Image (cartoon, rainbow over all chains, first blue to last red; front, side, top):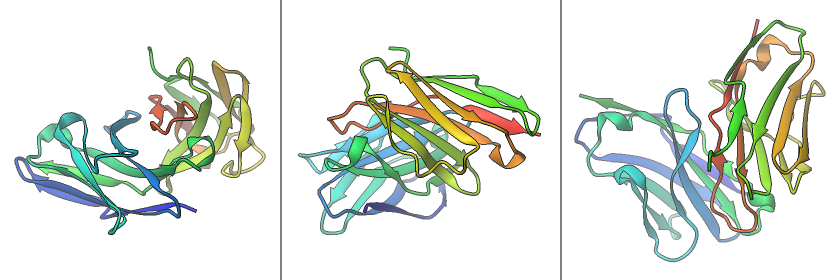
Amino acid sequence: AQSVTQLGSHVSVSEGALVLLRCNYSSSVPPYLFWYVQYPNQGLQLLLKYTTGATLVKGINGFEAEFKKSETSFHLTKPSAHMSDAAEYFCAVSSVKAAGNKLTFGGGTRVLVKP
Amino acid sequence: DAGVIQSPRHEVTEMGQEVTLRCKPISGHNSLFWYRQTMMRGLELLIYFNNNVPIDDSGMPEDRFSAKMPNASFSTLKIQPSEPRDSAVYFCASSYVPGNYGYTFGSGTRLTVV
């Protein structure tokens, strides 16, 4: 079975400050890892994904995440927060063995950006 | 591609009425997922289909919920009879198997049962 834990259901950052959202996963097989963003009244949009290869992956809107197998983590970062980054962020895990590409989502982290 | 298309965007209905939510997945995708999102429970997977066949419906809350996928380009989620606790945003998502490239989500249907 796979699981995802996102530390902190709410994060508040100042505009221009570092954004760091934490995600730890549990998987008995090599994982595929994803970050999604959900803006108010919208669906989830894929930010970035790790499947194989380079462990540092870059996504849209200046976000990046690093897969650390030893720490079973896939934390999301952005060097400088912008007001438009205010949204909810979801980490998710899947694997090559997951039937139908089934994703397991974390509980989400809501980001508030202060001016 | 127009993405995953859900209709309606908003639905307000009275308790006891039948509600049907619709989803058109991305052309070429062969897996389809229905999720429900609420403040209390977050994102819940209700059911998913692979090649139009229901694979796992263990997330369907009760017999009042049913889902169908008559062909590769259309799926419905039906609630009959609806209850106020069914009020939520319902998302449809699709993906291609094999190839773990994540899901593409629709914009959701906000259901309010009064």
